[in-house]
Length: 106
Image 1: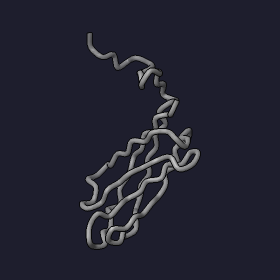
Image 2: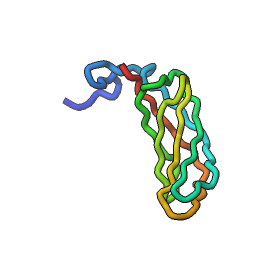
Image 3: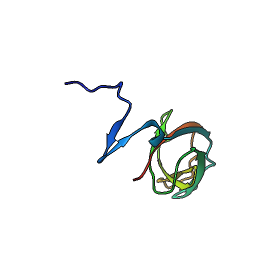
């Protein structure tokens, strides 16, 4: 039996996932130059996101070499995207649209 993509809900752990349980958002982020071993953060507004929810981050372009990106819900309706410079020199991240998908915590 194949997977039915027309279903209205999916399972996540022991619970069902509905569209309202998976808020998403995207924003064009232009991080400043990040110093060697430094960190920079910017935020994306995602209506329905709550602290404790899980976040998946997606790049719409190839990320800049030497940088590691992470994301989390830092406040209601706000996802913080952080970039860590893993190199020994300053790196200017390419401006890019970053997408986030939030999975509601139960």
